[in-house]
Image (cartoon, rainbow, N blue to C red; front, side, top):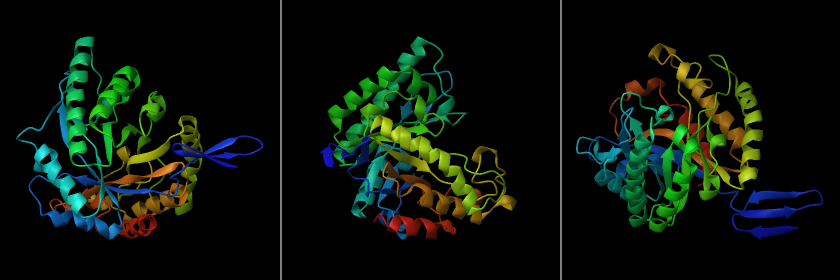
Length: 336
C-alpha cells in the first residue's frame, strides 16, 4: 500500500513502514561557482551547461578573525562576486540562463580559513558572533527572497557552534522563515553531520562530502566504490532517522594522486597530477549513490567563471577542462 505524507511516500508492508521521499527521482545536479573578482559577461555562467548542470551555488563570503566574534561582509575591498552587488548579478545571470540557485553564504576565518576550527572563547564572544552571523545570514535571506532563489544554505562547516548552540540555530531559522519561503539547508562537514540535533528545522540534511574513500595513489574504480558501501548504509540510516533527504552541499575530488583518499594530506604539486583518479572517483560516486532515493543530489566543488589561474588549478578540485567533465555531464544529463 502507498500512502502520501508531506515529503515522503509511505510503503506499508507486513513488517515495517519504509519512508521513500516523494521526489526521490529528482536530483539536484549542481555546481559551486567561484565568485569572480571583477564584473563578468552574463553569458559566462552559461558555460556550466556543458556538463548538463541544472543548479548553481552562488557563494558570498563573510569574514571572521580567530578570537573575535565579529562577522563582516560586503566590504569594498572584497571581490565583486562576493559582495551583494556581484552576488545579485550572478544570481540574475544564472536565472537568465535557466539555472536554479542555491545561495550559500560562507564565512572565511582570516589566517585559518576553515570555520571548522572556529570556537568562541567566552560568552561575550558567543553573543557577538551570534548577532553578527545572524545579520549576515538574514541579509542574504532577504536577498534570496527578493530574487526568487530556490534554496538558501544558512551556514557552512561550523563544527562547534552547530553542535553547542542548537537553540541559536532554531531561533535563526525561525527568523529566516519570516523573510524567505524557499528551501533551507545547512552545510555540515562530512565528519560532523551526525552531531547536529536540529535537522528537523531544515528541508535537506546538507553534507560537504569529502569522505576518504580509498587509500593509495591510484585506487581502482571498484576499490573506490567499496569505500562507499559502509557510508551508504550510514547515510541511508541517518536520512531515515530524520525523514530528510541528504544533499551534498559540496562534493568533489582533486585531480591528484591520492585524491580519492584524505585530500588534506596529498601532495598538490603539479608533478603529482592525476586526472584518472579524479575521473574514477566521480564515476564511483555516481554509480554508488546517485540513484539512491535518500540522496537529493549535490553541488560539485567548484567552477571558475574566469580563466585566471587555470594552470594553478591543474591539481585542484575543479573538473573544468579535465576528463572528469565528460563523466559529470553523462550523469548530470540523466537529471536534466
